Length: 157
Image (cartoon, rainbow, N blue to C red):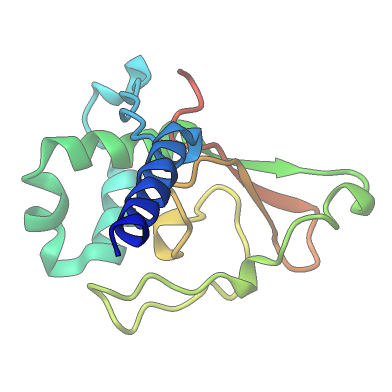
């Protein structure tokens, strides 16, 4: 009985030591986000209307009263979402379609996709993109020459 207990204890100790040395299980400290200097200015009228379209009556409580969210949204709208025109259709094939991305309906349930894509008025906040993904993302816009590219959150670290 004593040897059985000793064997179980020895196995448990060895397993816990090897588990603790595995680098995938170590806690990684979060990296700070570096915001570009253009995030210090106020929202433009266009940006504010995009926010109002998505957040509706919750805009003040969800975004405007939270300075960290204000910075994050400015960074998304001004620096991280890039609309690029590709001359060759082959360059766009690797990306999934924008139509496959669900809408962000948390605050405005009846929000709709745009009937026509206009790169100047496109509102990325309407879509449930994974803005906190550590990897860059890309999406094709229907049968157009455009792709929406989203830089990762820590792109300028």
